[in-house]
Length: 368
Image (cartoon, rainbow, N blue to C red; front, side, top):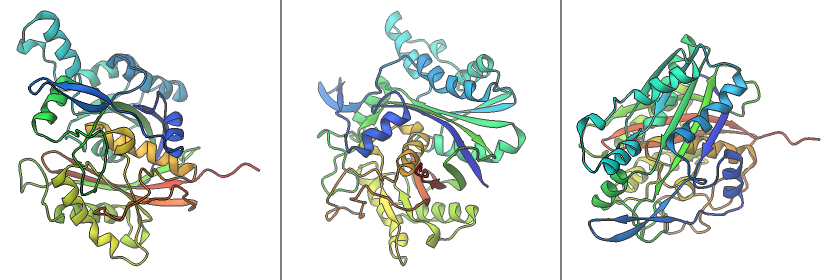
């Protein structure tokens, strides 16, 4: 597998495009949280809202239109939609407007993908909903299906919704402090992030600086909610991803951790990552969620695109200058000098669906 990522698009709390987001990260400008109300407790909790705020329809077209303009036509292309919430915000709005709930307000899982297929002339479309690994799985499946199409467009999005906000608060997984601290002993949960992203997968390099070398996804059935706390399933998935890419652990220079800052998830990921830290010349470690929040089903694409945009400019996403107390030694220096970086990227879904991507990022050559 060797698939190049073209025309990356991102709309997030860091701004309306990928370039703006990367500049914020490189400058060390962490986003300032908004808040939402937990109705059951009359409590306000932090969240990270996309800027500027757009309707879901506006967001999706803002992601796809630049790719259509760049390609000229999306006929012959496959569209893969990846999301946890899909169009739940529209469902919530309709219920509020009419003052009651009816089952017919709900739409089929594939309705958004079908509508976009019609609007943009895609040859086919499909929808993936595997919780927080949705977009990572979309990249894996997109790479596998690419030989059947002229190209594959992966569209991932996770708009803020009442159901998601209230649900995560009820599970006591949401952060109260406003400080996103993955792997820190005082971490107090995740901050939900609102974001959309899109990318074109192609077997041609062109002017792309990032390619997908391989990946692997599997379900840990030991629990109905998460993965094994000893990290064994996480390690299994990462090893299989490397094998699929034809690489060994010594080939990896950087690991992008999932890093939700929840107790159980960080403990399991830290345990599953110890293997890589015991290698000679262990890889650097980084996280993206302090910058984007947790984008749930979209994080597999939003984090991949933002990480690559930083590496292209010789920078790592660094949110802390002191890693001495952390479960894992996250990078503390932004400067990143390798011309080529091979990355293992972790994305783990609620319910135990774990996915790992193997990526290769190339720094932009300085102009003479």
